[in-house]
Picture 1: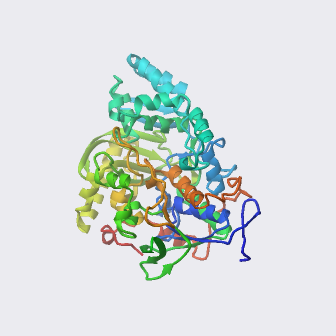
Picture 2: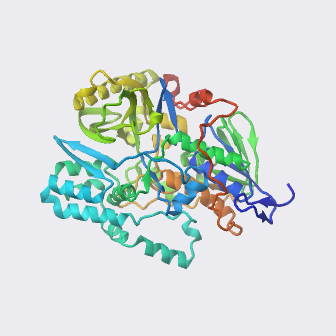
Length: 549
């Protein structure tokens, strides 16, 4: 280097010696941090424990079919939002990205009745009132509050701790009537909110998509994203989006290393000195960002004494700060099967983990060619799992675990066929996975694919990613802010770099110099090798937490 570095967006020289940053974790947050580090002229290296990027934002193949693990909707697809600019900058989205042509959020079926949350709010209002005239007042309020919730748009230009007075004023104005929603619904759970309605099917609907312990406004914000065109589903699935981000990072000159599981961050005189990996190798830099699960960072990589007090409380008080996971099964089925894109159904009671359930969903993927083979499509089911359920799975021996998955898969088949007789004998099993799968593959705390659930009465977890006592180490990712998810992950990666570059953040950094194409990914390892390495392999020898080659 010549003593200066280049802003890869503007082409300007940054009057500063290039610094090296080591990023632990190649998920969405780690990729985001790496991309923004390169755009600021920093030398960036990402180290990922698995063989492919994306963390939990991935998919894998079974029997020639692709299974998606992550995106049910992607907040930030509205081009007018700050978040869209971030997704575009990191290469995840472009102005030419195609989205699934879906017109609803989901459908709830119960006791012979159906209710659908359409993207068209007026259509939803009309059908709900026809279904339950006695709930008209509450239905109108629900629709009104969903409309207000469109104004809940997360800041993505910079973190709140870098806001000035003017920024706070503008942010407050932008929130508008959503303040009314927060005031009324932030202190009650979805289960409590559902009891305001007399219709049993509407009550079920309000507790179907998100865990019933969630604060009520969380659900309205989710639905509002769909209704506002800010929650599209990019065609091609989650893995392809992660690969686009990896490609963006590499094209900017970043380096990413796979099969590198971190085992320790060495600290001396309040400074991180190096990252040591399980294979015995090390990596050193000027700055370090850990984007892996915080339960692994604090306690394994560094001493748990460094964990922020509010996060420590969340891990200790699981009743107030539950984690959520799921038991899922994927099948192939004829493309003629079309009960609705995502449909929640009554089922004969089924014990999964430690809990007995009488509801589950069926989601068909025929809307995207990536999930279609010939005249057949992928269909997936999911049943929520809690901390107690995780513990129940964890107590199983490898043989018991394998048997439980097999028996539950058969039970799921029977329940789908009972609800949809037209698919009897046509469901081809592809794969099944549990909270332990997420734990093994992603080091996910209790198998959670989100952060802590935001429950009424519990203060939401919000962290800047600063580690008191270690000057050059930050942590970023969805665990920094409840309830987590992709938007939190991608902005946290960016925010970590902004905090490092606080005094020299380049202007207009979110304007990418080019739109990356979305052609199929190929590299020296080959697509087939990457697909195999990315599998959520749940063979009996892997369920106790060992990595699988």
